[in-house]
Length: 154
Image 1 (cartoon, rainbow, N blue to C red):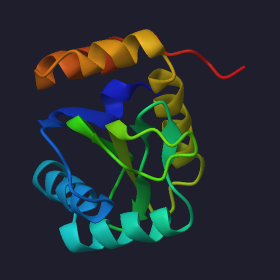
Image 2: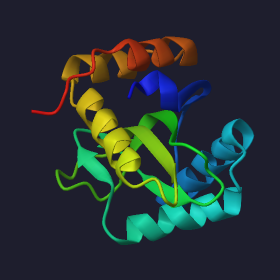
Image 3: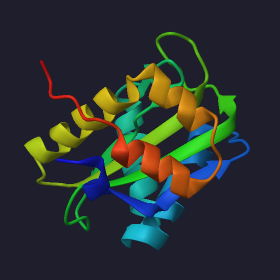
């Protein structure tokens, strides 16, 4: 699986700030609606429900919110860079500025987990994250993410 298969160039945004997780999830759902045809209200509910199980922030300013939805036919991603990092209840207590959201079919099973692992491995690269933080152009962000070497799990 490659990030280019799940991340459409039109599903990348740079925003100045977010006031809350709920507002972030609403914005992600709106992007999901316009790019992937998701039902925005159900997407917000699914993200909130998953976040209720525990924060999806993975540390170092990165969050990977994800949810399963009936109307999704394959794993879909949305990437957002927030210029003013926001609190996200990270284990390392660092605010979040890089968000990669995933939406998967309800019955995706292992494909959802593979996509989550791929995104996690990709964003573990500190040099890549520095480049993502230094760029505002969605086309450049897409190229950085999709051209990043993907390492196999050990």
